[in-house]
Image (cartoon, rainbow, N blue to C red; front, top):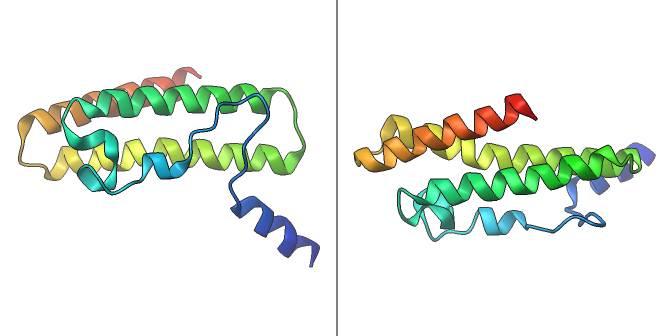
Length: 120
């Protein structure tokens, strides 16, 4: 019973004190390539990565302040969700999109997000 309540709590999105909230829905609406509003143009990958790095950095700072364990897990889950939105769409685009400019921007996005992940 306690485990079920804990897992259900982890599945709910939560805003974190002192952290600017970016809803997952802003990353996953259906108005651009693969359903991401940033990807209406190839250059959209740049803003997609910018927002992901900003949000992930805010969440890392929040986690570093040592909140309760369940909040840390939710924040880490949100980092994973936001980073995976960029990585998955960039990888799919790199391998399948017929427009060379989209492929190049997807490649740039992939490189930038990988650099962020390996430096942070």
